[in-house]
Length: 153
Image (cartoon, rainbow, N blue to C red; front, top):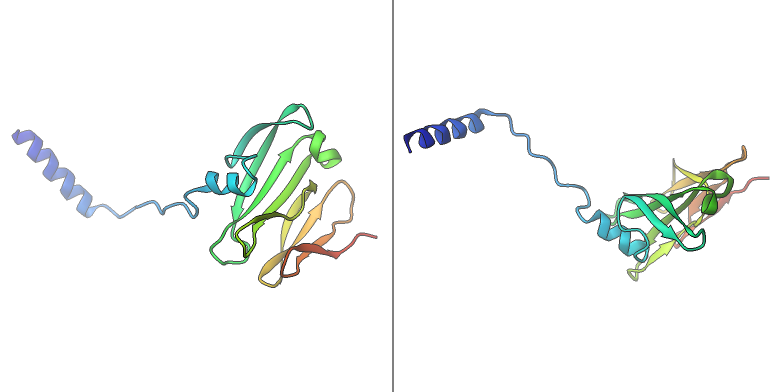
């Protein structure tokens, strides 16, 4: 019993002099829940596989939360990999934004890779979509949804 008390005292003393290193809680502790809600249950994690009926095969995906407009409500970017949905770009991308009514709305849903630009409109960044060509259209938030801002010739 004496040894137990000595160990406990030493441990407490060591903790009181150790630098505080508490891990910050994740920015969005319920990432998987938010992703599932945004994608109507199709994706349930930040990374994985799911069976895509239109392709009749399992496909890999990534999902990422990002608070694009700084309102505390994350938006959800998704990427599904492979030629079946992604075509020549090999990536089918989407962005889900929750509207004022609390409904998640799909913004893109087509092949390509996105890049967030520094220019902004109505609080949201412009988004450049790259694909297989050498012209990359830019989409801009119009207050309701992302719409094409700079077209390719």
